[in-house]
Length: 496
Ligand code: NI
Image 1 (tube, rainbow, N blue to C red):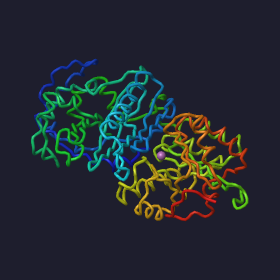
Image 2 (cartoon, helix red, strand yellow):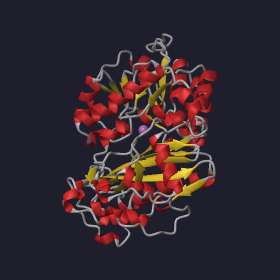
Image 3 (tube, rainbow, N blue to C red):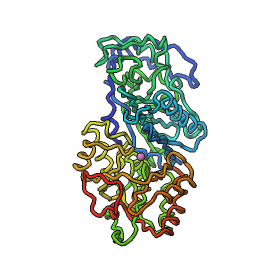
Image 4 (cartoon, protein in one colour):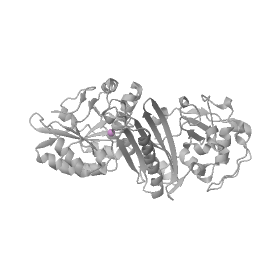
């Protein structure tokens, strides 16, 4: 299944490749040799170009047989949310982690939290998407958004690697960078669509070397992408050049050809193409909305424990702790995490816990248009329903950021807005003892407790939180049971 969600989010500006792109490529120091140049390539064929198709975005289920772990890092003062995969390969994982952590660090340095508490928080949001998958090549793209004061911008960064040998490829390893640079420099203005301010001069003689995205279309066309403001005026958005498959073939290294094939015809990296083709796609299992056992919170001291940002690699451990304590919980899931961990999401539903919406990509909703908010919400409702059979009725907006537009969209989607009144700061301290202490100290009757099941330290705190609160006479219930009859569009921080 190919995901269409991101495709609409990326609005690349197409550059059309001019006939001068067929100048002979000059060999560059790449680790793998260029293939022989097909003799049939002519200038006229080269001029038949693609028109800026965005990279194919694949279902991360293709990686389900690899030990993929999705890591997240978040912050509230500066609104930072980043999520990235790791594959259990030291060099590959170090390269991926290095990109994300250095981008976060740079953002923190460049855009510190304003001293004025009323000023809007700087925001950085970094997703990942699967571009390509084969036993010898995986491509991912980090897709980012940052907001700082008056400026908001998008960024992207592709990464290619061979999971069978733990090899990381640089953009210059995939193509003859001189040839691609020549194609870019030689673009005639008439071949540029919607780009009027192309300026490659700051990039020197090898502008390809500054590209932040290297990918292929499903047809095999090469896409070379640049960040906003990099090669054109900032208002022109991210800029992409598309070189048609026929023209690009002689420019590809052996690694580039593998990357191209992995994007044109992706397969599970651990299976052969034929085995993958014959394997059935996962069948959505529909379970009824769990019915929590009826608890009378007018008589009992009820509290709700909630988990945000998952499901993730520690969620199944968490489920065993909740089961041991006979505790129902509420999970506010991210659509992108459900997409990566569909079986875990289903396990949460089958265990009878409540599932709510935490949006698809963890953006601050108060900065989005009603249409964008609706997309963040409904795409997540849809994937939760498709993967678990549960129809959510609760929304927890990322960062607890709410305004009238967000409430209105929530009401339209049939979702009550649920915040919290006990913040354990687990995301910040990453300390199991401190998380336990905060939960036991701050919880009162009717509390909604905020935790994150994407952090190992938070999950490890759950047995002691359960035991400690039960010892104080509290009864755990889902958020819906705590609130009684939560109404769409109404905001809640605690219950009875
Ligand atoms: Ni969150």
